[in-house]
Length: 245
Image 1 (cartoon, rainbow, N blue to C red):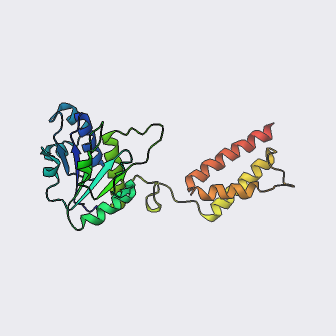
Image 2: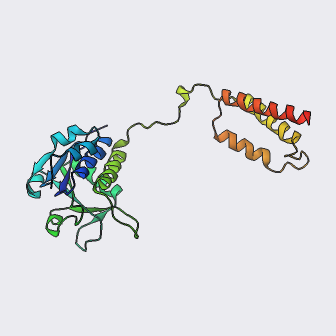
């Protein structure tokens, strides 16, 4: 995945665990530039513990006394807020924010400012921002943990950059068993029809749409040959039971 020149700046974080949680969230999503402005307690064992393997991000994090120092050399600054601020700053969703960050990062370094856990960014700090990200939350409970906010934006950035491979269902070339062919599926459908007629579930004089719906169901499921054999074994067992009754 291509790297992006974006730095996450945490301003006056009060709890070191949130710093570690933010580092972990960033590493999960292939981001590695972290800066801390006047953190309350840092370094801290709590931060290292919450980082859970993202120690390299903590180790390489820049520590600054002021926001101005953290933003030095940045061409574009994105702020974050948990509430409407009534300022003349464009407000973006996380998805829009990620799109803007990637576009601006082609021109120079981008910084994303995350404010204090209890009060966010000051108006003066927001004055340094070119745009503002707000994460939609429940109106009844809008409190969002700092590391969770970092995770949301980090995820959107990964998606916009081209997401990393996921553990998808086994693909055609990786199947343990080949897909059932048309003849095998037709044999299964005939076997299903015989069985549900034998049990009385299906009236052959009034079949309605049952078999058509069952065909659609199994055709959507990408059934493989081994699964067809299992299903037909079950149907055979049902038929033998019906004969004994």
